[in-house]
Amino acid sequence: MQLEQLEATRFDVVVTSVGVNDATAGIAPRRWREHMAQLLQKLETRHNARHILFSSLPPMHLFPALPQPLRWYMGKRAATLNSVLDELLSSSEHHHMVPVTFSGDLSLMASDGFHPGPAAYAEWGIIMADSVRERLKQKADSH
Image (cartoon, rainbow, N blue to C red; front, side, top):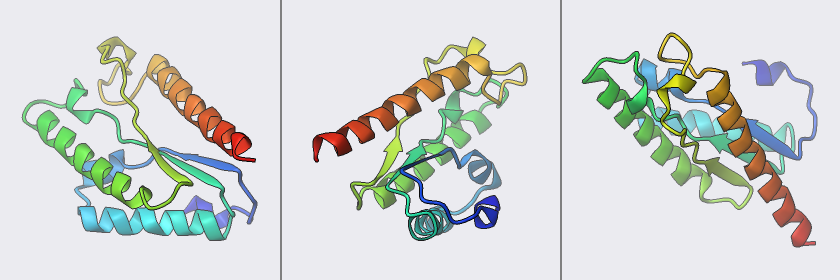
């Protein structure tokens, strides 16, 4: 894992986007939770991360490259992993899952119909940046 190779550095905010590969690989929800708990622990202890924001898994049920019923199934898998992650993160005011709901415009997808295109990444970036600003504002307001 590249995180383990990173020099111990303090981070005010960490933004993550993980899970699609886990969903396609069929990871068990219990194992997903363990992996995410380990990631949180490393970010908190080694990097003293103040705020950790996890992007939700994308709406895989909308991926045009996936034929039905696989598209439906992957959407359910993504929703399950999102639920597990949300439950894990709910125990701390410093951990947050940021729901990323794309506009549903399929033209935002890359030409392969599976990966986001530049416009989808731009939407995601705006959503995550707004969430970072909100967390930092809350921190400033509490002082």
